Length: 357
Image (cartoon, rainbow, N blue to C red; front, side, top):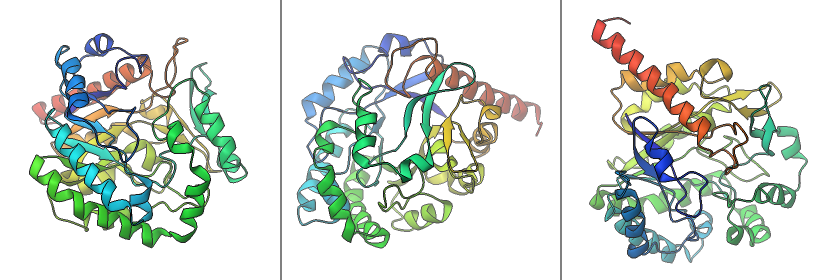
């Protein structure tokens, strides 16, 4: 596996490239032009500026997360073709910087949903938390205010995107899950040929959480949904981002099994743990298996058994030692997570050499 670390760019991240460089085994940064709104072309000169910064620290830019899909594409509006053409141009431009994987999602309105960005855990650290009953009784505007008051621009919750939130909710009144599937298929069949030409794998991220929120349709949320998604095209560019935390919020999703079944289509792995509760709540924990409900040890074993050569990153971490950081994206816990993942991987490598297991 090839270890990476998500980085939000100079002047937009509490973590620096110098700090990331000190984490063992990190080869590249997962990046994006976060100031660019969904639907805009990513200019070549801006892309190459990020490459210059990464090159100075010896990092590759193989993985982009994300070139956001404009809402009109998800809604199937007549204007979608213009935004799809812009998307194709952006794909060609990131390829010039060496991009090999583009992680994207097809979640309506919100990329992800949490009710508390700094819920305290028993050890005094804080983490992202989802309270199901609160979401069911909360006004979307209240959730938006809560999420955007963190002091950092949160991916998927950009201010420009949220200005039209009421219009977006109204538009989805006529778009159900089946229509969303059709709209996604149209987008994919348009962009996959370009991705294939450029040697890029389009790797969809599962819905987070993997169920409907505020009655919005959600479709990439289970093993059967992944099976349906992958049947859309046999293009080598048609792939997955397998997020153990997003899918793992639903205890019915057997993450190691899903990895073993679809390993050859997984281009990018987000590995993180969540602790789930019977009432539908969940909280993000350390990466260690025993701290959450996702068997991270078996997750890594499944990738090792498959001879996984794709890209991996530790996903959301807790907030430790009074670190001031973007919620879920501090330095310390993600660095600890990387060392846990490497420890598991190295142990399985040792087993393999000794013929054990």
